[in-house]
Amino acid sequence: MVKPLMASETAKSEPIAFIDLKAQRRRIAAQIDAAIDGVLTHGAYIMGPEVRALEERLAAYAGVRHAVTCASGTDALLLPLMARGLGAGDAVFCPSFTFAATAEVVALLGAVPIFVDVDADSFNMDAGSFERAVAAARKLGLRAAAVIPVDLFGLPAEYDVIVEIAQHNGLFILEDAAQGFGAKYRGRRLCSFGDAAGTSFFPAKPLGCYGDGGAVLTNDDSLATAMRSLRVHGQGSDKYDNVRIGINGRLDTLQAAILLEKLAIFDDEIAERQRVADRYAAALSDLVTVPYVAPHMSSVWAQYTIKLENRDNVAAYLKAHGIPTAIYYPLPLHRQTAYRDFPRADERLEVSERLSRVVLSLPMHPYLDEETQDQIIGAVQGAVSGGR
Ligand SMILES: *Cc1c(COP(=O)(O)O)cnc(C)c1O
Picture 1: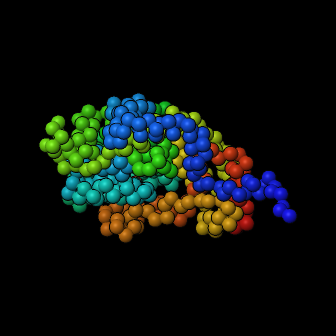
Picture 2: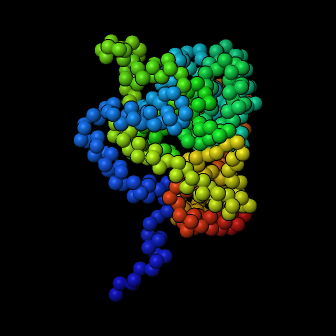
């Protein structure tokens, strides 16, 4: 005789997702399918009408003049630096506690990333370390050229302070908003605080497509024109007379069509992420260090990252209880093989190194229901009290 399935077993048969893209898909399946069908019908796969429509919507959303879509978040950081002509002899200040792409684009252009430490509460660029990095660049005979503040885990960098230091030193400001698109700083959405901002539509980002994609946002007309040329091999007004050395960096029409549908529910999804974050904070703040969001900011919760001393034991306990977690980032950039020989602000970037040992990201997405969240909370409570 087959044993009847209990309700609790049905729930268990669906493993808890770290990021549940399938739930979002179920919500807007009809709209996405129609959007894809529209592209398949008109057939303009490259630079079709959805690309231009998306650029208009993204620019309006972020409150900037131009959105230049491109093939990835990495290209969205590369294109503005190329347009500025960055290269040998230029120093670009990057936080060490970030995803590799932030510094990768700098090194690819032959410029020098200089690693800056971060603040332990915000995970974002530390002002004092930034100033020491500018001094370090001068000592090395490099031209202090640009800074790339990152809005890590969806939380804005401290723009008032970063922008002031950057302007004082004549730096180009490129915001790495790959994780922070949609978040607010002093009531204004990110991507207008620097000279340009790059964001990513990688599927796991808060606004993700069904593959790779990205966009640069800027108020600078000539920068936008240069980037539109650079993303298509540096083409000029005559398509076969290239006026710059560029890349093949376009966003697919299909991805633009998908993003238009996802952008329509984005604000609602941000509110849902906030709901999840609030419940996590209420339940966990006595046990672990939960993320701190300063009153003049909002986060889009690309990750919900807690800090705890016995991180690896807790992660193992959670895994054994069916709770997926992730470690962003287990190794700061200045300690990674490809990056460890680049200069840094200080002999040791102590906060970045310490964070890499204590951070743990919990499941976070807009479709995390309260029952599942309570399971996660209960497991963290069990792990922390048992692991002591
Ligand atoms: C994801 C990410 C990028 C790169 O985006 P891709 O679309 O994967 O190329 C750059 N910077 C940060 C901080 C990111 O999280």
